[in-house]
Length: 193
Image (cartoon, rainbow, N blue to C red; front, side):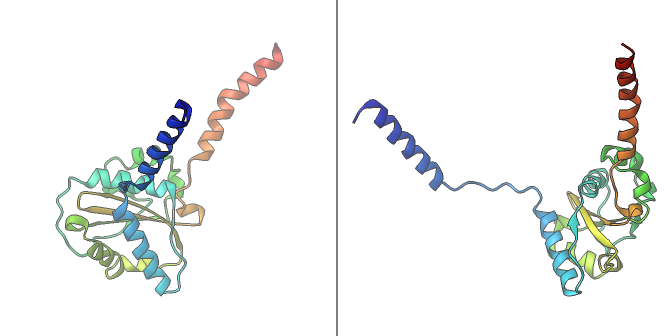
């Protein structure tokens, strides 16, 4: 066996060895994924369509969970829902909307549902969304999208609608305006040359 064949056999051996070793699975979103699965199972039992992940709602839920993580956690039955258009309970709400590229005009019909459960015990978190006042929102077929975020003992669910007033759509109008503001003079300048 020549040196080239030995290298090839050795590389194949290393590849086979790597394939047989257990690979650790790192899932930072287990709490959110478990809750989403539970919420969708619950909605399915009510013959409602499943909630689908909404990118902007997910961003907002993460940011809101970060903001409230240091608040005292007094495990209670779910607190009051917060309309998406009235984020006054959160200090940096307008800043968070900008950070998540959400047009404020698309938040009126969205809803924010924060809960605090010690160690985010999955069954207790799900119960806070399905067996309390929050259930009326989870049961509502108008809500089609969801974003989830968790920090420490806090879970935040943001429900969105498919209507423009509750979709948490990105601020595309500002992007188009910005592009025309910067590129139109450039294009006009090119024609003058």
